[in-house]
Length: 212
Image (cartoon, rainbow, N blue to C red; front, side, top):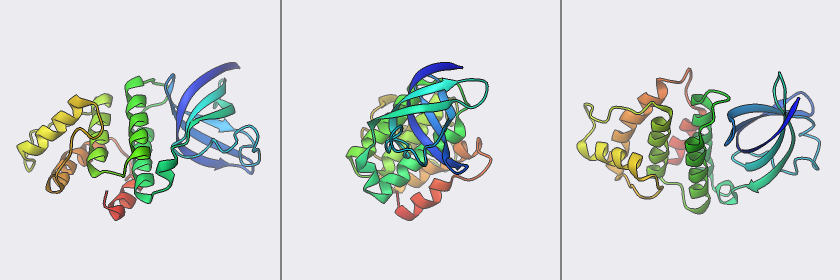
């Protein structure tokens, strides 16, 4: 069994048995991976509140033939601003669910890691923005090679232009979609995402209730 360090963002947590947790992470070094945090539901010393959704962590891993084991996790950033607001929680959950559902395991993508981190950082500092959510989605699709065709029926040139700019600027807040163009953007983005999913996104229904 090999020891390794990784920088990762928690995508999902699942209880496993009476004391353990399965942690799904997107790491800078290895891409998406699942690890077992043994005794995480009981031990306050080794993980000290680090295993929370969206947390940005420094990890110590044991890599073997089965699931990696998390031996420790130190908090880099817990993003407290996200946790204080339901709309921000919903957007962070949406981003993490997309990364979890659309990415294969063990394929590093520094660009995708940076996109996810920058979106969480943005949510931590500013109110949840419908434009930022579409910005994240179209850049995620571009990075994964699933970029949608922008010139399609029912989508105006203005919406197509905004989506194209979103993929060029690389900075949250640089592109703002007027309210009447958000639905048009979804006509492109949602089918492009759904094409690669085997079931609906759980976070999307919550976001619709929040109006984000």
